[in-house]
Each structure stands twice: as C-alpha cells, then as structure tokens.
Image (tube, rainbow, N blue to C red; front, side, top):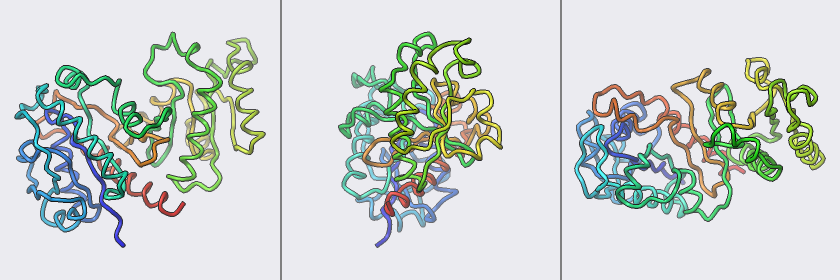
Length: 326
C-alpha cells in the first residue's frame, strides 16, 4: 500500500505561499507527492500547471503533470503583498481540512504555509496566537513543543514568544519537564532515534557559574534534569549555551533544549538560514512548516526561496516513515 500524500495548507494567499507551493512542485514533482488545499485562482500564474483533484489519493497521478490542488474556494481575490480579510475564513478552513485529512489517514502529514495573523483576526476573529496553538486546539492537546530542525541540528526553546524579561518567571519545573519529555518521545517516534541524547542549556551566562551569575540552574534546572535522569533519560547539562553549538558539541546529542527563543533559534539560523524547518512536537499527527513568514514585501515578484518549504515537505515524509515503523 502506498504512503498517503502530504497535505499542504496554502496559508495567506497574498504572501509567498502560493509561489512556494508551485516552485516546490517544480522541484519535487511526483517524487514526493503532496497536494495544496486552497483556491486554484490563487495558485495559478507561477509556471506550474494546476491539477485539481477530488481526493488526496489522486495527488500522485496528478503530480506527474501539475501541482495537485484540493479545491477550497476563498471569498476574495488576491493582490500579492496585500492580505484581504475576506480570505481569512478560507485560510482557517484550509488548515482545518488538512487536520481532518491527516487524522483520517488520507494524508500522511500536514505541512502548513505561513499565515498572516492580523488578517485572520480582522477577517475571521481568529483567537489564537498562531498556527501552533490553533493546531493544538484542533487536536485537543494541552501542551505542544516547537522544534526547529535542519540536518545539522535540532533545537527546542522551552519558552517561546515572550519578552526576555518574563523568561525567569515563565520558566517553571513543570514546563521544562514536559518540554523534555515531549522532545524525547518525538525523537523516538518521529525521528527514529532509539536512544535519544538531549543537551540542555542553562538560563544564565556560563550556566550560572555555580550561582555566581544566577541561581535558576541550581534551584530549577538541575533538579528537573536529575529527576528525569533517574527515570532513564540521557540528558547533559545544564550547559553554557555559548559552547553547545559548534560542530564537535553537536555530534554529542540528538537535540538541544534551550531556555528561551533566541538561545535556540540563533544557532540554527546561523547554521542553515534557508533550510530550517519548524516542527510541532506532541501532536497526534505530523506537522511541519517552513521557518519563515508570509514575506509580503516580495510576494508575487518571483523572488521567494522554496528551500525551507521543500525541506519541510521532505522532513514530513521522513517523519511519517519513522512513525509508521514505531
């Protein structure tokens, strides 16, 4: 039995999502079958013939001659670079459709195109901070974890989109414990790592230097790591974040868990700025996305780089294969 194709929700149609979908098909064709959930009107004009399909199973045959599109009409037209709130409900419906298809097994994974949150709020009263929280809501999951991954490194920020001044208050033992547990489970199930090794950063410079530069390591991080080690997890740390990401250090772990957003994302964006993939861990289905936004300033100009979307589709396929074997 063939593996179901990957569902790709188009995201904000006035952004680079439609162009990237077309360029991804131009590169991958039938070698990595995927289909776009969106309005064919928004996906035409990018040198990729549109092949409308009635069901995901038709994507493989359609991908031989064009970009497979599972048609979902949107209310508005598209002006590249200018989101139309009239399309907001269509963007949301496409995501919901992708979740339903992957949960029913008609798609092997969901890859999501970038959304424009203000347009969704203005046009449809979207009440979630972003894609990740919406997907967790649809899946009925209370806690998920964001991972950024490329061939050289996988990184996980424990706290994400909050001011740096709030990190010490938001960083709790429970949050760190759950982040580590979800990360280890995903490494086993979705990445095929039989015995995951996780490196954990400290919060402070030099991992607190024995309390001289902060006590979060002593009072919070070390107790959590010790308790999880006692349960059999392979954890190293807390480590000084400035020595965790050179090539020799990266060879010693399968994922690095950082304490805040930039501590995790600066290394991966330095190592592979164009090819990083955003992965949501802890969902009952596989979700990946390109590690960039709607790029409204270059939409419709033929300048969008499909590297991250292609990497996201490839990683989704690899994760689906690993999950099928677990």
